[in-house]
Image (cartoon, rainbow, N blue to C red; front, side, top):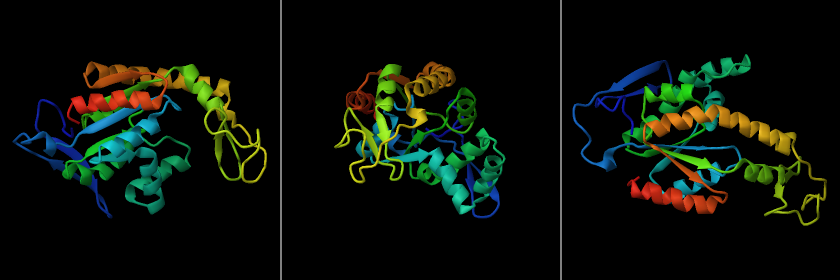
Length: 252
């Protein structure tokens, strides 16, 4: 739900026009009359390769009122369109620096503002990634539901290490569920398939360990707020049935 703090009825968000940036504060002295009028926010946490994209897609399909907010896509869009936020972000990117958290939050809230006003639910993808970002976002908006996908590391290692690509086209194969017709060769060109360095088991394990280190405090942060539910398993289709039931049980 978009609000500044649970103890107050104030809602704050940032809005940006085509010219200079503007800050708009929404003040309300009354609670919303029904749950349908509230703009809710859901966040999905999960290791890279753990099925987060698959689960997100199923949520968007089964809950039509949900708007997907991808910070990566938003960032690229603003840079491409040379908006004020995009120009600021590009300065950091060109210098090799990370885009600051407050600027990323502005990007999210700019995109979300029109959906908030229509009482749409928002599905956050890619932000917040760490405890600092979560605390910064909390100053602007509360997260109502956090889905934490707990897929075993070795399951993910097997999935990703099983992935081979055709460099020229980007076609992706998996020997466990989408194998090429001829071992090691692209179906259309017959050219050799390769495995990216990032997909090799040792690289995957290192990446997942780094994710766990950064995300553990984030999981605890939302767990303490009572909005997080962890779903453990190895199959996305099975996990999603439990995720959907949890959201349905909470009238999402």
